[in-house]
Image 1: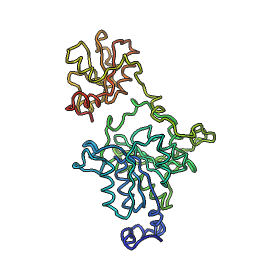
Image 2: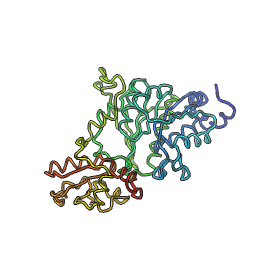
Image 3: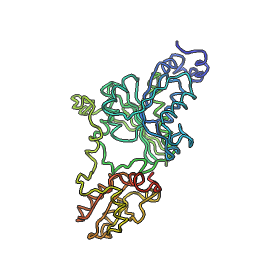
Image 4: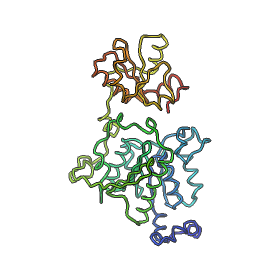
Length: 378
């Protein structure tokens, strides 16, 4: 046993559980978890893993605290706005449990560093919010033989599973290819119920504790679905795909790839620079009162949050139904949050016979950054 007298007192309610006991608590102390993303999922997961006595917790993130984070990312407070997430998180976690080690990786997880960062840990808890990172984490875990505790949230719905290539399916078995980005918007575009990441993050932490303590039945081969609006949980079985490109019998992916490029393969992009316009260029043309129509294709809640003055609002899903209200003889500038949905909108209008079109690269995020900071982008 390696538990000190203070640890025996701290974890006494754990130790009273016959499934855990001193042996299980000792395994937690000897265990290590890498949390990818110190945001909505990573915040509650990290707090509970620290409180549970997981001996070594690694955090990967390179973001700073923003006001829009605070309704769901419970590691941070208003006073932390603008500070490094990892520095704040480390302070909070060490205050919660001084007995454990907190290791910080203040960098973007990439194909170049993922294997070296993940390798020293027993398992990975994936709290990322984008498809390239999810595929990267999955493939790295398969290559290294590490369990990948997956979680995702969107609006009122959440998912949790444990992807373990040795005994069950991996993330690619369930999702062989990413969806088009305009089909499933991010939380910044579609919103998320503030408490939802708390529920999913705690479920991920639960699976991590079970795996480290070697208790219970983990979610290997099962996908847990949570509907917060109707307060419903359901579980579906997922099988291992023996033809999977990374964990199948004859894998074609044996090393990490360019995941941004992989995910962009399904993303509608404007590659012709003649069909693009920067926010600064658009602002200059609007200042000169050039004859053009600016169209915002985001959702109503995004529009209400902040938009370009003088723009028309036609959500992407209504664009085809309303395209006849646009003047084909006037140049049309399309924009969304970051440029992906407006790129899709441009292609839709091209197919409808429009020829005078441009996509504002970088979307409202870049407009707010480069042209008008008073426009709230998220």
